[in-house]
Image 1 (tube, rainbow, N blue to C red):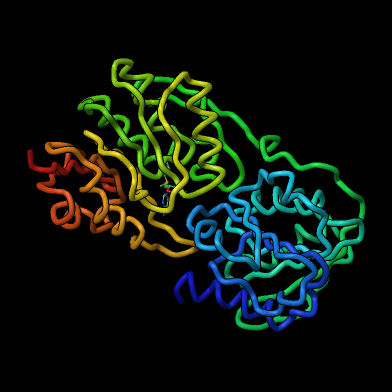
Image 2 (cartoon, rainbow, N blue to C red):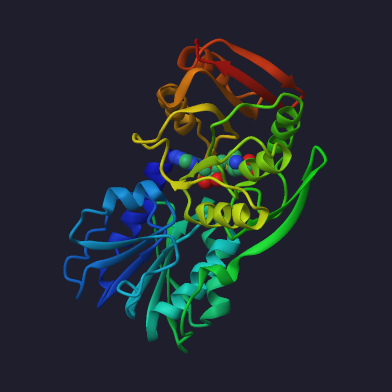
Length: 350
Ligand SMILES: C[S@@+](CC[C@H](N)C(=O)[O-])C[C@H]1O[C@@H](n2cnc3c(N)ncnc32)[C@H](O)[C@@H]1O
């Protein structure tokens, strides 16, 4: 089953229970850019809070909703809600953060609806909900999903996503950094093994600027590159996730790194051109392996590389990127390989 169809299942399960969505309604974590039917009679446009830049862009023009990219709501959107629907996120800590946000957004006694698939962990999520609202109970099971409802009492005041920021130290190839992390961010609190192999390779074989870090997560690669090679210049960075954008900006600031951190689903069309693109690209979408996003990125990358420029990419060895790099960027060689990871270099002809 694809992630899109799994997202549509959760929406269909919610639509069967549309009578729960009354008054001013908010949706957190909508899995696909498709507003559930049944919101038409709501008192005000639906608030959609999403950490996905592509989904935020897709719904930005809709007059049926107001969209917040990320959990830092501007004042005009932070109005009290009567009903808040939470779609179960992948990470447990993200749900804790979203539940704290729900407490701040709901009116006293407001209705919280939790929906998600069994294989996404709705059972564990429901236990988290019960810890906040002991009256939480299941109202429906359909389309591999469950729907839970609770009333939330006690107003929590304001919600500040930066209160969920944490710091950790890491070292790669004798270079130390302090890195920000937040719930839901990739490799939360430690250096990913693939990233470590890429940084060791970048220490041995430095790259030339200007540099872009695609899929930057907490900003570790861009900040490390500048700490390791002070003459390199700014490293711009792109990520689709709101928490990644916040953390990358924080990591850059804390380590004195420079570069623009851009929120985007894939490479934005108006992005400039770089001598080097470095990346540890995504290969999961939800709970299954999905390389389609990276394949799209590789097809788009060439027009953002200068003549003679290079792509330096780390990936699990089993992922079929080498032929794609050859096809999309240019001649490709494997600079490093072990049992799990490979670091590839593909060059655009001069
Ligand atoms: C494997 S992680 C690498 C993170 C970071 N570079 C590191 O090495 O720790 C991949 C990152 O890709 C981001 N991502 C996923 N889909 C994306 C997309 N469509 N466009 C941009 N970034 C995306 C995720 O949010 C995640 O931060």
